[in-house]
Length: 441
Ligand code: DOR
Image (cartoon, rainbow, N blue to C red; front, side, top):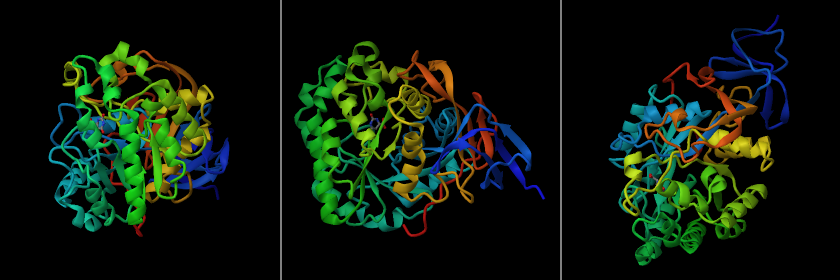
């Protein structure tokens, strides 16, 4: 008897851990139920994927969705709308909201707010602080917790653990891989006078490569002493890539699409829109991060989606806040890099699905396998598009890539078997649920 599924993705080219090839995928009750030639099977719904590539759902493990407290920039609904419009099926959201996500109550509040209101699946990073270090064993295991995130250099919001004893106290307690914003706060303080009023090009002079490298070196030293595993977010310098290549047993590495796609020459045209922590730097760093990606030193991609309103960004530097949106443009930008031959589609899948699942112990996501969540990012590798502000679903309403032409575009976003986005339309909204993690964490 021919098999029956709820949904079949038919006629597409599947990109998976066993290669790239023509295979159909059958889905039942939100899970993958069959892979192969399903031409004789029937289903309640069939999506014609002819000419398209079917990827495991893209997981963006670094986004700032601003709720609660900063909803004039973004909220969990608008941020996740941007995610699915861009082909992203799950996000890990950051703790620098107001109140900060540093307690069980604040985390539970976010999970409640996100449940069936966000359009993609989600987890929330819990901020590690001097005050909550002893609570970490409970905090990092709560439902919906992605793990512990620490800011060693100050950025948007008040989260900060700048000192080695503070970081050691946190890493003495973590069992999961903790994520770090590594910029040396002491050096940032010493060099604040280097910020030139009205001149955002001074941002990467102030927050220089030594600020990043020195902090990453301190962090790895502490992690080793504490026998902890860590994740270095948004690596922005070639020097850190060279350093981290020798510490992969302890530290995993995130690269962002903006550090791979933008460089300091753009301050002249887009000014404070380029302002980000850690900064977008000279081209030599971008080239070196690409080299690190080609050599496997970079483990995953994260967008660091950090929206601010245009009005806020229009303030004269340094009153302008750091951050730019990115969750919606991650897939098209990286597919464009695939089209240009800078990485393979398989490597993109490794960086955006399998990689986050491996690093953070996500259960049932990150590959196309029977029993896994039916999350897919369906893309057209040949489609030429121009990224426009008008396409941006984030409440901030702008992108630093406005006007950029790309080859490769997300056509569909399937979350646990539901067609959430198809060809630029939100088709099945608001089904997001907390991501599951492996039980042994
Ligand atoms: O530029 C940044 N903006 N870097 C961060 O680490 C935080 C982010 C934000 O929340 O705005």
